[in-house]
Amino acid sequence: MQVTDPAVHLFGLSAVIAAGARYSARTRIVGAWCRSPYAPLLGRLAAAIIWGCGTVAGLTVLGIPTAVTVPIALTVLTVVVAMLAAAFASGMIRPAPKPSLSTGD
Image (cartoon, rainbow, N blue to C red):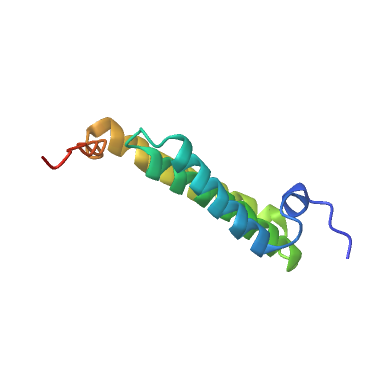
């Protein structure tokens, strides 16, 4: 089998590698942005994008052409980003308050 699609080569033909990369990216983003109330949201968003790339790569290995999977993945990504942008713009999603650092005294 000769596969030359970049998405397949990116994750090495394995959905397990994509899942590991997803978890690692989420953990690193949340750790790097730990002071931001948006850190969990950004981590989940990055993890979902990586998971989607791994899914497209896995479906390509199964023989489903990228001409089918990529437009569907881009449509889903566009809808999710548009919904989040509308929710932030309208004020439906607000930053979580930072937890207070009380000493307990």
